[in-house]
Amino acid sequence: MRKIALLFTRFVTVLIWLLPAAPAQAQLVQTFVSGLGSDGNPCTFAQPCQHFQAAVNATAAGGEVDALDPGDYGSFTISHAITIEGQGWSYAAPPASGPGNPTAIIINAGTGDTIKIRGVLLDGFDIPASIGIIFNSGGRLEITDSVVGNFNNNEIIVYATTAMSLLISNTIVRGPGVGISLNANASGATITGVFDKLTLDGAGVFAGAFYASLNLSITNSHVDNVDMTSVPVYLEGSSPNAISTVILKNVTLNQDIYGVLLLGNANVYLSRVTQTAPAGSTSTSGVQFLSPNNAAFSDGTNHFTGPIVGGTLSAWPSQ
Image (cartoon, rainbow, N blue to C red; front, side, top):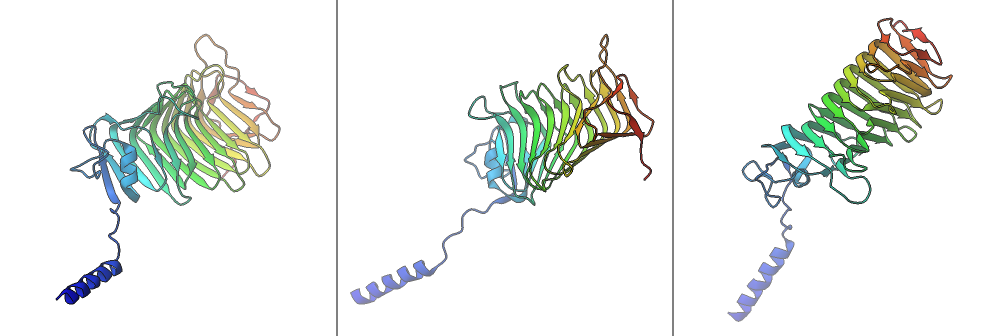
């Protein structure tokens, strides 16, 4: 009997060894956060997590994180395709201190990944060197129905090293930071952007093509109260292969000393653009050319309080 028992034990041991290991807990397609949740929870609807980072970590590529109630859900890093659905009541802020630039959302995703941020309030509390969103890598970033403001360094910044696209819609961006900064920083690192129903309050748009092309369309938008040292729309292209091309349609540059500044290989197309200076101030320029390679095209529907400096507006080419 002892031999039989020993053989049976060895058989069970070998069988267990041959069986596949138990799989790790699968990531979820949809996860949830709540102010009453816990990051020790599985991030389900019944047992939500407390912070976005825990939920992002538990969400499968292409999945969605939903905020169940108003709350501060913390700063976080995204490394795969995902949707953050804030419902208009979720809130995130950068760390109060730490090395580098305290940032609310850092995106280090794959080249084919799409990241969607909806209905999220990002507040930087004017923390020194703080940044709202850094888009370091990924295929596409969409920001809709959100508010990003009070970041000391920059509200939204894109560093493109591969081809990227960007959509910002129905969103408010507030200073004191630069605003939205787009940087095509490597050969082939093109940026294609569409901004619609965008309000920039005390912040502007910088579009810099340093090694590759940048194409941006801004429509039905307002840029208000940019301070005396900043520019509502600043376009820069630094080489023949690095060209910034921007279309402005139905855009108001309100209470701004400057309008549109062009540097290097930068082209702008203007339709129904209105620029006004602050009361009691004299506008320095409506459109200013800082390089002989600049080009600005108008369809004749624009109004600038400031003069056209350093160049002339050409007729919008026929399509």
